[in-house]
Length: 141
Image (cartoon, rainbow, N blue to C red; front, side):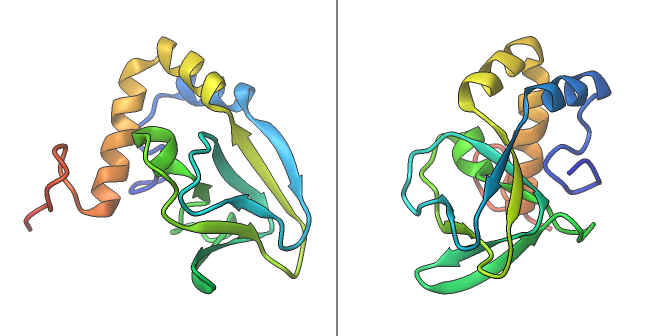
């Protein structure tokens, strides 16, 4: 999550330590729903163990795991950081249990009150992964 091109890239170590203290572990059964499409849930989740399916209708768009270094294991980052509805259904993989690290919106707000510049770094990272500038316009190569 902190490697170049990832959600928390460029964040300072003190912020990351404070973030770790705020996270809680959540256990999911196979197939259990994490987020519903168009849900207004405001939690940020990271896959600690197992895999989650990001789905558009009933089709799998991607599988999110924590053991693929070049892939982010973060879920719900757009609703959490930009206040939009979830664009996809997310559920635990049907073939195994899943452990998530979850940050509530309230804990996140408290955390970012102490580290406001870190929120902007994270938002910038997310926009870059989407190929957008700070105004939401496509980046030109």
